[in-house]
Image (cartoon, rainbow, N blue to C red; front, side, top):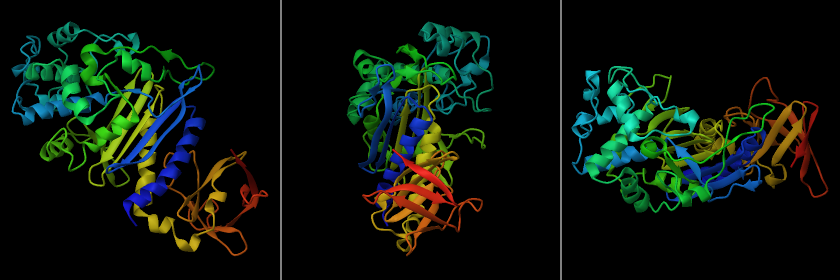
Length: 451
C-alpha cells in the first residue's frame, strides 16, 4: 500500500466529514487543501464567502491568514542570515539603534532568535488595542512602547507569544535588506513561488478576492461582518492574506528538495525546537510551531484575525501538507486540521486493516451517506471496498471507527468500535428501488438517510 493510495481514499472521507462539520458547526465558509509531494489530493470549499448575499466560497476565495505572516517573516530573516547580512544571535539593537530604553536594560540583550521563537520577553500586542479598535498602530507608537518598557519577562526565561516581537522582526528585515518589508517578502518569497493571490497586507486586488470575515456565533444574534483593514507596520506579524492553492505551494517549498526559498540546512534549522511547550502550548521553532497528532509530528502555524481563523500543517518527511481557512473569528481551524491529520495518519498506518478484503461489499457507494435519528447522526464511508461507520460530530472521526463485515444474509457485523456501542452486533440496511441504502437499523433503532 502506498501513502498516495491511502491519502486518496482518505480524501473522500475527509470531504464528507468537513461538509458535515461546516453545516452542523454553523461555520460561514471553509476552504481546505491537502497536498502530497507535488500533487494536490484535495481542494474543496464549503459554505459561503458572503452570508448576506449567499455567495458560496470558491477555489479562488481569499482569507486573512494573519499569524501565518510570522512564518514568512522568519523565512525572510533566514534568507538574510544565509547571505551573511544578519546574525540571529546578536542584539537586535545592532540593526535597530532605536531598539533600546533607559527604563529597562534587558531590551538591549534581546536577539533576533528570541524574537523568532517568542522567547524575547516582550508583551503580546502593545497598548494600541488594535484587535478591538480595528486600527493598527504606526511605527512611532511601537517605538514609544519599546522606549516605555515592553518587557514582561527576562529574555530566554519564558515562552510568550508576541506580535510586538514579530513587528520588530519586520523592522530588522527592512534595515538589513534596504527594502520595505512588503517589498522584500513580495520579491523574495511571493514572486519566486508564483503566489498570485498572496499579499503581505491588504490591497485593492486582495480585497476583491477576500471572503467576508464574521464575528462569533452568539445565540440569538446574527454574525457581525468586519471591515477589511490594513495592518501597516504590523504586517510582518499578522498582515498576510492568501488562498488554498497558494498556501499549498508555500507548504511544498518546505519539503526536502525544494530550495526555492531556503537551503536544506536553513529549513532544518527553522524546524529545530527552540522552546518546549511542555503540553501547555505547541513546541516552538523559528517561525513555525510544532505539535503531535497521536505520534505524528507536524509543523505549521495558526492565524486569527478579525473575522478569520486559519491553520496549516505539514510533515516534511512524508511530504504532506494541509491548509484550513475559515471566515469566522471562532472558526475551528485547529480542530479541523488535527481531525484531517488524524484521518490521514490512520489511513496510512492502518490501511490494510481498514480496507480488509474479508469485510468487503460490492458497490460500497450505495451505503455512503449520513443517517439520522433523534439521538444523533452516523456516517457510512468506505476505504477500498470496506464500509466504515463513525460519528461525524467527533473531532477525531476515525478514533473509534466501526468496521463493518458483510455477511451472507445481507447484514453487517460491527467488527470494531467502542465496547459500549454496537461492537459485535449485526446492523441492517433497507434499500430503495435503485438499490441505494435508505435506512440503517442498529440495536433495533432506525436511522434515516438524509441528503
